[in-house]
Amino acid sequence: MLLLAYRTLKKECCKEYRCLNSANPALFEKSEWQADDRRRKWYVCYKWLVCIYLLWGLVHDWLLYEFNANNCKDTETACRIKWFVYCTSWAYLLLICQALMSAYLITWQPAATKKSEFSTFHRFYWIINNMAYALSLNVSLVYWTLVYSPGVMVLDFSNIKGHVTNSVLVLVDLMVMAQPVRLLHAYLPMTVGLLFAFFSAVFYLFGGTNRLLEEAIYPVYYWKYPLKAAYVGSCCEIGILLMHILVWLVFLLRSKLAQLVKNSNSQSEDESGVDIV
Image (cartoon, rainbow, N blue to C red):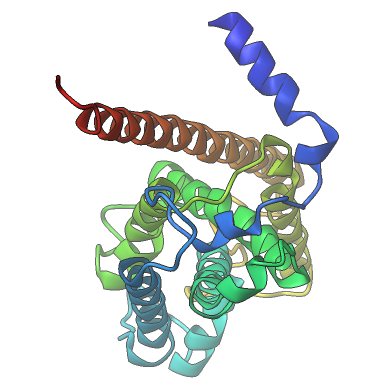
């Protein structure tokens, strides 16, 4: 077991796995559970349904969400604009971007992969995908452990969408898609975490407030107390790293299960083709 873990980690550290490149771009345009590289209608439909759901959630938050005294003490317009200051919103926007890019690749790009070209679009999608998945999982983890207050926060559609179904969609997609996950790409989502830490500090210094007119975007992340804020930020960075490791482990599990299924199907086909004398 230890030898297998060592070999796996050693393989992850090779030059081929460190860079944002792939010799098989078709992996980014199909499901792990199909035997060939042909486009599958069910997979295309699945990807676009995810996009529609995520976009509907965005429209709901921007235009339809009803504010009250418990979730907004500023003007309604200001509260809608302040949607952008929350890390949940950053993760959700990244999730939408990667979903739309993935749907585009699967719907319109398969012909390009016949030339075995890993395009700039593939690479940019992979970057956004890495950022979105680990960040979304970490947002859910941090929200339910540090931020959520049962007496104040309501479990409405917006809350569930941003802190539950976001992670469910990530885990489901990880088990369905065929694209690889590289352990050393953890720096990508961690960079987003650092950017949010910098943004929240600047936001505080320039007198920004959240929807409740509080100086901190999140009460636990209050830059009036820089040491505490730095500690919370460091913990969040560790959380993002752990979530990326989780994403990588799910990828390894999916790959192993898919290989077992394919080997079993191949063995069954071989046995059915044997002539009985």
